[in-house]
Amino acid sequence: MKVLLVEDEPQLAEVIARSLVREHFMVEVARTKAEALLKVADHTYDLILLDIMLPGGSGLEVLRALKESGKQGNVIIISAKDSLDDKLAGLDLGADDYLTKPFHIAELNARVRSVLRRKQFGGSKAITAANVELHPEDRTVQVAGQPLALNRKEFDLLLYLLLNKDRLVTRSSLAEHVWGDHADEGDDLDFIYAQVKNLRRKLKQGDAAVEVQAVYGIGYRLVET
Ligand code: CA
Image (tube, rainbow, N blue to C red; front, top):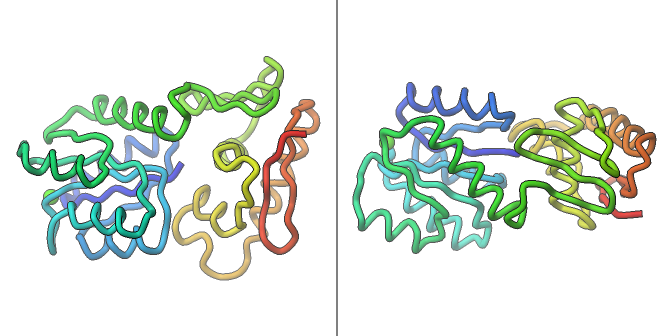
């Protein structure tokens, strides 16, 4: 899962980013309004943590841009200003939650989990397809009730493919989501082949009733078999 952290205060950004990485998120950071606008125009994120008072303008403008582009992701506003106006404007522009600084990192993690569970996982703690059950929070996978051991990248690939079940996922979007915003720069995406190949083999060996189909030259699609 890829998170964009929009925060100009370096120390706070570092603390939050470190905590998210510990929770196994891929984290990208933007420090100004302009940087954030560029990021959301060029990439997609599973979650955006958005500060309001930014160098160059308001985080609300980033929300507005997201809304206008139709690319509205999951957004949690993190703001020092406990202002009802900002809160209402933010929620009105599609933000999912609002956290006032200073907050405890544990509180932020809980809100992140809650928004993702509600928005990405349909309110459930697990994502299922046929006999495959993936638990994003404790990072485990079961096939017909039996644990399936995956390495970190294989897990992240499976999560992204499951979230996009039956949809064609391009190699570059897969690379971005699992390896970060700059993974698709340059044309050598061979590292993806190796990881997908291992994932497919493990799914097959575990008798999973899903398969990752390769769409030649484009990407992959996870389907139930
Ligand atoms: Ca700020």
